[in-house]
Amino acid sequence: MITYSQIKKKKIMVYMVEINLPYEIDNNFMRKIPSHRAFISVLINKGKIQSYTINEERNKGWIIFNTETEAETEKIIHQLPLYEFITYNIHSTLVHDSEIFRFPKMHMN
Image 1 (cartoon, rainbow, N blue to C red):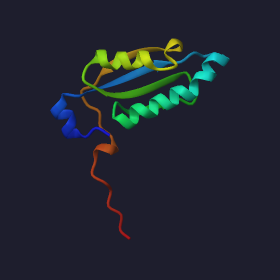
Image 2 (cartoon, rainbow, N blue to C red):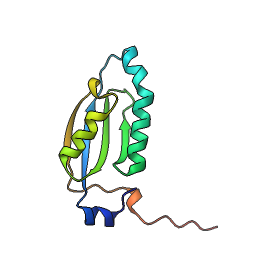
Image 3 (spheres, rainbow, N blue to C red):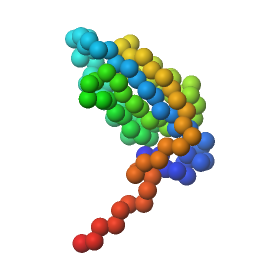
Image 4 (cartoon, one colour):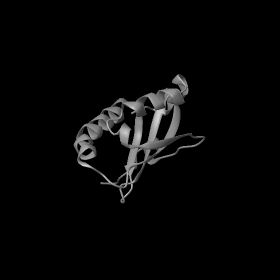
């Protein structure tokens, strides 16, 4: 996971990518899902992706990227196994806050 201090030092930007998935899914799409999920997991483990969300209808998704430039974000998107099936918009963010950026919660035993 990339920390706040790394973001400040490396000038890491946070980009929200809104993806549109096809309404009709064929076997070619279904066959690529396992490799797509594996690639997303690798990117999360490397700190390039903060979160990955697909809606219940399975036609829209949101990915929060930690990259230095929009071009780097786009380069990663082009590597997604499902790239040929999606359209997307990249949004640079001014503020992105989440529980993961907070101190751990205290739990009394």
